Image 1 (cartoon, protein in one colour):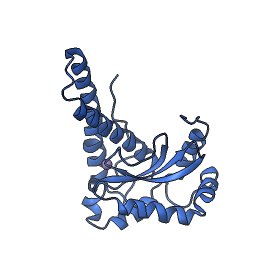
Image 2: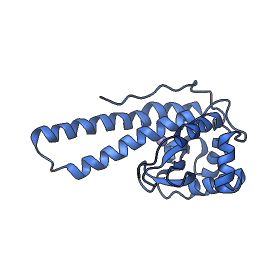
Image 3: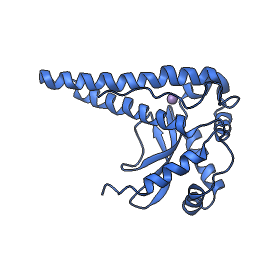
Image 4: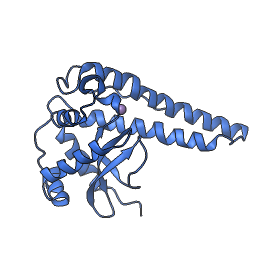
Length: 203
Ligand code: MN
């Protein structure tokens, strides 16, 4: 089995002016593609290691697998979280859950924005469902794979790597975060919440 780069549900220009077609083309076609290729390449190296019974590079290979696979998962989710008809305020189940878990939509957004803008180096902000407590949590994800709770499922993510915004927003990260809220597809997030709520906790 090998991983594949998923097609976008919208045209490269569909998210402008908040996300330029130049960034979207590079981000999806080059950066996301590199994670897909990296995950496939690492799985092949692990198969080679097993066939040769040579695990001398195991630590690097396991790190590479986590990095590339997590990059593929987060970017696949990120594209689905965005849409040309996005923006505005959430409604329905996702709005009720955000109000319950964060006090208000506004308080959620402030925490999510602070988490996104506070990422040191490369990483993401993520809104994730945590099935043991049956609640939503915000996480800062370092790189693609570190610093989030085991067993949680992200339903809304924001890419804060420089490749996600620098060509358009330069160093003004806060404007990228503002632009992001204009293209968030809340219906997608609402559907994801409805689905993950039904999933059993791992422990
Ligand atoms: Mn990215």
